[in-house]
Each structure stands twice: as C-alpha cells, then as structure tokens.
Image (tube, rainbow, N blue to C red; front, side, top):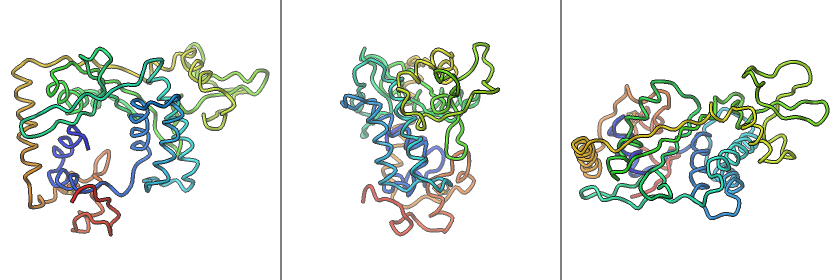
Length: 305
Ligand code: SF4
C-alpha cells in the first residue's frame, strides 16, 4: 500500500490502517483490478502496453477472488481487459513509459508515491479512475493525500488526471470506453453519439461492447471516440500547485505524526463501526463484524508478519 493510501485509510479508521500493514483484502473489486492493471501497464516496457494491461487483468482475475455478483467471471474479465487495453492506449499515447518518482524521506519514514513522474522531472501526475464524478468528489480529490499530500511531500505540482469509466450494469460498464453503437447496414459504422450530442437510437443501430467486436481495431475504436467528441466528457485534469511553505510544513508534519503512530501501534485499535460502510465498504468488515481480527481462515492475505 502506498503512503497516501495508508494515510487515507487511517483517516477513516485507525484499526483499518493497523490491519492494512499486515493484511491484504480477500477480494478485489473489478475497479481495483482495472486500476492495478492500467497503473502497471503505464510503467511497463512491453511493446504493446494496451495488450499488457488486458493480460494483467486476466492474470489478476485468475489469481484473486473477485468481489462481484456476476456469475460469469470470465465474461467480466474479458470486458475489464478490453477496457484496460483502450484506457492504457489512450493514456500512454505515443510517449515512452512513465516512471514512478523515487521514494521521499519523511522523518523516520519513507513516502511511497501513488503518482507518476512527468518526463520533465518537475511535475507529478496522479491517475484517478472513477465510475462517476460530482462536485463533492472533485473537492475531495483536491484535498486528498493522493494530491495535496503528494504535492507537499515532493514539493512539486501535481496534475490529477481523472478518468470516468461509467457505472457497471450486469457486469459491464456503459461509458464509451466499453460501449458503442454499430450500424447494421453498409460499412458497419461505429458511433458513440450524434454530432449534436444526442444518443443513437432508431433502426439500424445496435449496441456493442468492445470485447464483442475485436475484429474492429483498437485504434479505430479510439478514433471514433475522438470523432464523436466523447473523450472530453470522460477525462479531465486538475492542476494542483505546490502549496505555500507553511501549508507544506503543516501537511508533512501531520503525515509524519500519523505515520509515527500507525507504525508504532501495537495494540489493535477499537473498531469505528460508523466508518465500516460508505460508498466503498471497508475491506475488513468480514472480520470486524464477527468481532475477530483478519486471518487467513477468513480469506485475508498476509503481506507482513
Ligand atoms: S470494518 Fe469498520 S471497524 Fe473494522 S477496520 Fe474497517 S472501518 Fe474499522
């Protein structure tokens, strides 16, 4: 777990941060798999990073339990792999692979970044993949350890690159990264919306998911997304400058104090039961709500003794 993630977990519940040093959750959500795969592909040396991202999805699906109500895990894996391929290809573009910044020292601790280092070497980029966006979510991102914490730890501006992949329904995401409309007559034109922005309804248009039409090239799919102007609705960037020196001092001081406590805590903190469920349930609910600690018997994966 990188440092911003650990600090965010600790903000929610100290017990969760304590457990996170020792245990990984039993199941990955499909969005976790997508994030891990795209993150890995952006720094890989593979000739085709998009392909690499898709293969990484399938690898994770075969190695880990998936938190989903879908019965057909193979179809869900293929869908997520196709999405990871398109996302990685758009995000990485023609640039060489991205790099992670070197770990930063913070008192006795090492700050492990969640960002990429821009080729200029003086700016960080944080990729944030979400299923939806709102004003509240945007405000939360601007104040998060992922963004403001990183800007203060490295004293570098951060570009938060937000990608919206859409809600999941019946195991599939409905945003144009994954779903388009294919005309059934003539040259099988692929579209995402009309020029006036309205949806494609009426005779001849059939909804298709990316993994169902792999005879259409990935570049064609992306070109058609650009042609219909949907990319601007699915990607946005927020520029976060380095805060004033006194703010940097306060934020890094707070991070250091919290890390001191997290790493020196020996006795398991009390449960914070009002924090267990929210937009995303805490991964330790299956243990805490049986008044137990995580264990291999409960399906948790030990990452440190
Ligand atoms: S399940 Fe609840 S009490 Fe347990 S670690 Fe998570 S937030 Fe804390």
